[in-house]
Image (cartoon, rainbow, N blue to C red; front, side, top):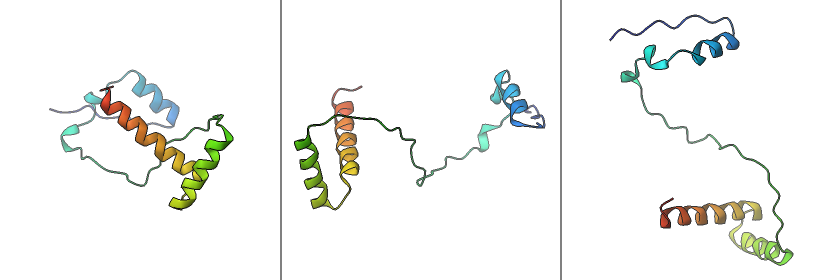
Length: 92
């Protein structure tokens, strides 16, 4: 099937306007698409504040020191593991 030609754009605003009311399926042949992996991309992060008891922070620092990782990194690991566990056990 012949796909429609994509216009040349002078700037991003023109391109954004174009795609806001055009369907990419009319212009792009997805049959040649390839799945790619970008293993070095880092996910977007957002800073939050969490109040924790000082004793919990100290315990976390002790565990992190034993594993030779920063305590905030260890906290992220623990959270990620628990979230994954909860998501799979509750079929969310």
